[in-house]
Image 1 (cartoon, rainbow, N blue to C red):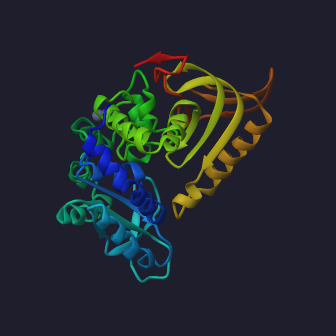
Image 2 (cartoon, rainbow, N blue to C red):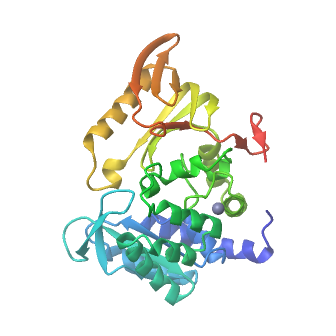
Image 3 (cartoon, helix red, strand yellow):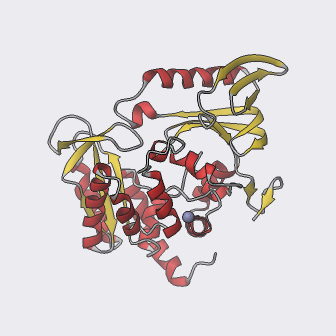
Length: 338
Ligand SMILES: [Zn+2]
């Protein structure tokens, strides 16, 4: 995807400021970049800022102003307890650590609505569609978001408890751009792992990073294309580097030489199931001692050469999954190409 001269100029003027906002607020640089370039009307997220968020807020607001964005901030802090967004509101001056909603847009009204709808969608998932529309998500993925609400209590639907697995269940193939199992560049969950509109969005992000920050671009592409992911939740996964062989989308085996555990539920959520986390951390420990992992619908088995050193039964065939994109960029030798 080619950038226009105007887009290049905007990026040159705004990128270092975007990085400052990212550093102070942890709001995704790619999201801010796409908002500045008018590829999305607004961006919003819930973030931890420590007990005194107001200290950084004026700096963030000033930086935003310099790149033509308005900042809106929620009137409350939130205690977030699950991916579903079950939360408690607490006042901004409450000493408990909480999270705060930030929204950015070129329109003051849309920034304000961004914090408002984010808040409302946590109380009532029906606001998910309205929020997503405001954030510029593709219509196909918005409809998928409605399905994730799981209004009819479909027991096969993980809903927002594990949306990445729902994206996977909707897919026959898996495009590297939509690798929500390693680090996602999307702020929504794609209706399938080959959703054309979502791929186009990520391609645009990469044409920006390729132009303005080649190093960042390579870093992100590496995460999206190299590792396989042993994935439990959006906050808990172990990345494995090596030779991956897919059995079905979600199962497979990998002879690995390196692992990278990213098990963060205990820092991401403020109340978690400690038993699960210690089990996953234990699996990471055993993986360090082995060199091959096989994940089927029923079992996770770890081998050291030919010897099985660990096995655990899965309660559900989708928890965990072992996945890696099967549609890779052209410059990669193995796999299909787009
Ligand atoms: Zn879609």
